[in-house]
Amino acid sequence: MKNLGNMLKQAQQMQTKMAEMQAKLESTEVEGQAGAGMVKVRLTGKGDLRRISIDPSLMTADDREVLEDLIVAAHADAKQKVEATMAEEMQKATAGMSLPPGLKLPF
Image (spheres, one colour):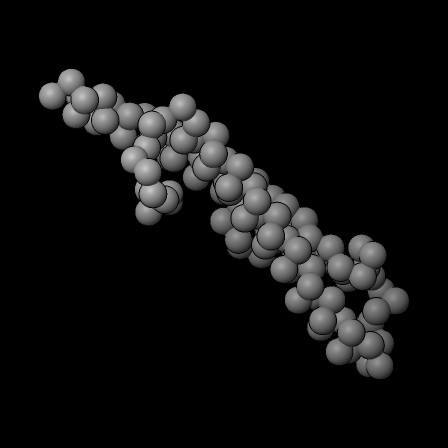
C-alpha cells in the first residue's frame, strides 16, 4: 500500500505542475520568421495566432504567391518553437517522477 500512496502523491504533484505549465504556456509567445525576417508570425504557447508582420516590400501583386508561402513558412517555424517550448516545460513538470515505462504525457 505504501507504493500506491506514493503513486497517488506523485500524481497529485504532477497534476499541480501540469496546471502551472498550462498557465505559463498561455502567457508565453514565440515568434517564427521566414524570408530572412521579412515575414514574422507570433503564436501563444497554446498555438493561437497573435500577430503577423509583413515587410512592406513584399506587398506587390507580383509577390503574392511568395508572400503566401512565407506566411506558411513563418507559421511552421513558430509552431515548431511552440512544440519545443511545450516539450521543455513537460520535461520540467515530470522531472524526478518515476513514471511507469512507456507512459507518454500529456495523455
